Image: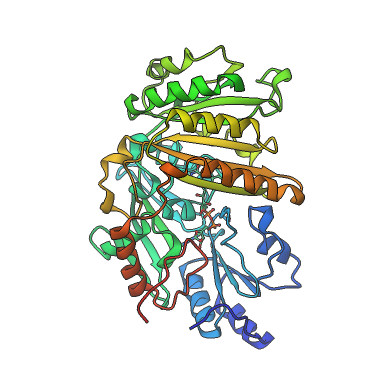
Length: 453
Ligand SMILES: Cc1cc2nc3c(=O)[nH]c(=O)nc-3n(C[C@H](O)[C@H](O)[C@H](O)COP(=O)(O)OP(=O)(O)OC[C@H]3O[C@@H](n4cnc5c(N)ncnc54)[C@H](O)[C@@H]3O)c2cc1C
C-alpha cells in the first residue's frame, strides 16, 4: 500500500477527527497553520501538510495513526522538530505532532525519569537537575528527546553514562496497527533493541523511561578557543589525548569561526578559530587535571573551560542554532584521525564558505565502546571518533555552497568512513520492521524498508 498520494479529505471527515481527539487539529487556513507546519530547519519550511494533529496523549496518537492508515495519508512524526533532513513535516499528509506531550517525571529513588514523546532536552534537564541527576542529552537544549534517542544520541556525558539510547530502559510505542505496546528488557525486548538506534521506524513513542545518574549541579565544562593556526596542533594533541582520557570527560574539537560574544576578544569575532570543548561528569576539582595536556597546545584566545552549572553547558550554544536557520549536517564515523586527514580538515576549515561552517571531531569510546556491537541497533561502537560537518546560513542562495562544503568535508574522510549499520544489525532491523510496520507506514525517517509483504 502506498502512503504517498494525498487523498481528498472532505470537511466532514476532518470533523470526525476533530471530534475524536482531545488535542488540536490544524488545517490550511487556520491562523496557526504556518507555525504548526514549520520545523526547525528553515531549509525545509514551506511544506504543506493536509492536517497537523497536536496530540494531547497516547489516545490521540492512536486515533491519528488509525485515521492516516484508513485515509492513506502520509505520516510525518514530530518530536522536537529538529530533523535536519526535514522528516518531521510533509506535503499533503498528516503531521503527528507530539510537542504538547512533554511532561517529565523524576523518581529520584529509582533514579528513573519518564519523559513524554514530544519533550526536548531542556525539559528533561530542568526536572532531573532539581535532584542532582541527569542522563545523556543533546548539545542544543531544544533538540527533541525522541528523534535524538531513537538515533543513538551523542552528548556531553556519553563516555561516562553511554549514549542516550543506552539509558533508554523502556518505552510506550503506538505501532502501525494502532496498538500501544510497552517495550522493555522483559517485554517486547526486540522492539526496545530496535528503538536503541533504529530511528522512528517501528512506531511512535509516546513515553520514554530513562536511567538517571548523579550529575552536577556543577560540572567542569566549556570551551577553549585557539587561533585557526593552532588547529593542526590541537587535532594532533586531541588524537593522542582522547583514547586515554578517563570516561568522566567527553570532548569535541570544533574548527569554526569565533562567535561575537563579549567573553571573546572583539578582534577575533567572526575569525576562524579552533575550539576545544569538554564536559567532565566527575568531580569539579579533578577537571583541570583531565585536560592539562590540551591546555599546552598553544596560547588560547579565550579559555572558558571551568566550573559551571550543568544546565549552562547544556544551553551554551543554543543561541547559535535558533529555529528557522537553514542548515545541513553530515557525519561519519572515523576509525583513525591520521595526519593526512587532519591536514585536509584544516584546509577545509580555512575554505569554509560562511561563519557557521563547523567541523566537529567528537571523542567517542568510554561507556559507548563497552556495550557490544549487537546489543543495540546503534552500530560501530568501537569507533574512536565521529566527524560531523555542521553548517547553517541565513540566505537561501548560500545553501548550495554550504551543502557542497559539508559533503566535501565528509568526503575528505571517505577512506575512514563507516556509515552502515553492519549486515547483522541491518538484517535484524529489517525483520523487526517486517514485524511492526510491514506497509512502511512510518517511512519519513532514516528508513529501513520492509522486505516481506
Ligand atoms: C541544532 C541541532 C543540534 C543537534 N545536536 C545533536 C547532538 O548533540 N547529538 C546528536 O546525537 N544529535 C544531534 N542533533 C541531531 C538530532 O538528534 C536529530 O536531528 C533528531 O532526529 C532530532 O530529534 P527531534 O525529536 O527533535 O526530531 P523530529 O524532527 O521531531 O523527528 C526526527 C525523526 O525522529 C522521528 N520521531 C520524532 N519523534 C518521534 C516519536 N515520538 N516516536 C517515534 N519517532 C519519532 C521522526 O519520525 C523523524 O524521523 C542535533 C540536531 C540539531 C538540529
